[in-house]
Image (cartoon, rainbow over all chains, first blue to last red; front, side):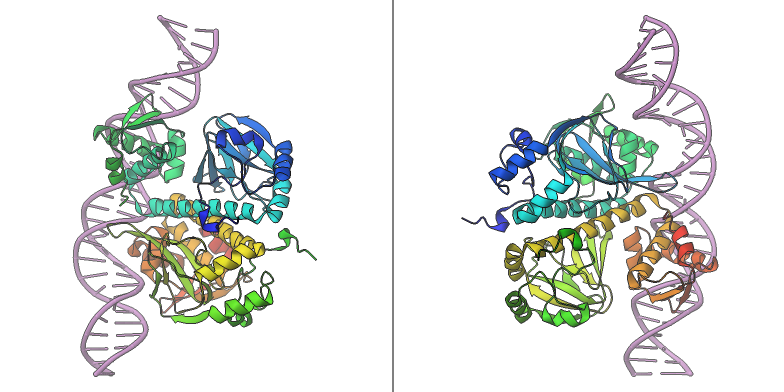
Length: 241
Length: 241
DNA sequence: ATCCCGAATTGATTTCGATCAAGTCCGACC
DNA sequence: GGTCGGACTTGATCGAAATCAATTCGGGAT
């Protein structure tokens, strides 16, 4: 029985090999058993320390990967060193681009991270033969595009306080989408990274953290551990309707 | 004979009906003659005056379209009225999303525009049956994603002068990609739109135009017509390597 | 041509975030 | 425990862009 295209949601993981299955909870219906076997044979688990570069801007990308654990930041840099984080990828996102030789940005592990890599050329062969697979990848890219455009509004039109609140809201909701109240989490980024994500300086980020703390929007322990007593209040500070 | 996936470039137009063919120069190899006929039967040409809204943020999208002529701006708005242009689509770009009911942003004709529309449900059926089609749409979305992320760097890390120069460079290269020297064009956006694209105010945009004019980076006639005597110099002002 | 009105420019002033400069915290290591 | 060093915070000052306020420009209607 044909599955309707509209039944596929962007939250579905596009590609899953045997090594990923357990964590991702279920096989990928887009692949035949043979393909799954082939993929699993050439996949490999890798652990990345925080700060490890996965691929540099403009470099050849020989592999794609599933993020099993951790957060990967995508960065664009100007010749003079100014840089901007243009995307954050959370587990279980897919990383990389079949049919693209060069990476348009560098990718770096923001936290300690575990990924499951696949040879790019193998994926390309599979994508060509399994339209379902391309559709799933396409859906993930559309999600990334919407997120990028949301963030353009944040970068272009929000003030420092709204930017920092928007970042905290993003992290809070990505770590635990179910949470409506009383969420707590460790920040996956340093102040410097947060500044590069928000188009601010570390000093400004720090001051806004302090302000939000004094307004009881958040509590902070050990610089990294954040508690949000009222996520809707945070959302208001972020300027999101 | 199978065409290799890698032979398809992002510059290829994903979908072309008979009404588009002449202008787009060639049929779409992804469609069978029957499909082409079906598509052409349900396609319709529309002229849009500058300022006409194609679809509102969060609205139902019943159609997709090829832009035949003109420029369409994609906008996200905050509840208090602040807005950000999150994308500019030039002819012959594809507009809309098969398999997405709601538009994530509003789309509005920036200039007088001509589009060729297709019913969304028809495209969805075709995409499901022609994997090649999905691949082409996927490539266009990837291009949009790269452009959005490039622009995030501009919004987050460039100063007003670099932003305005980046905008002019973008327009100059999109209007006539071949031009290396001495290009001239009409701006497709008002100062207010440019401000919304760059995350600035109209006053700041205006002042930067004046500065660039005084530095002989550009010449301006009648507020809209711009001449760039040395595009590489403009590129330097834009902070692009 | 003249009037009108919205778009664009220009000027004066304010403000928010950047910059410069200490200081403090905290974990790693001895 | 002590001390070293990087990450973070806090304070003082500066400056670029926002804001407020007039003009000026330009295109369309009469």
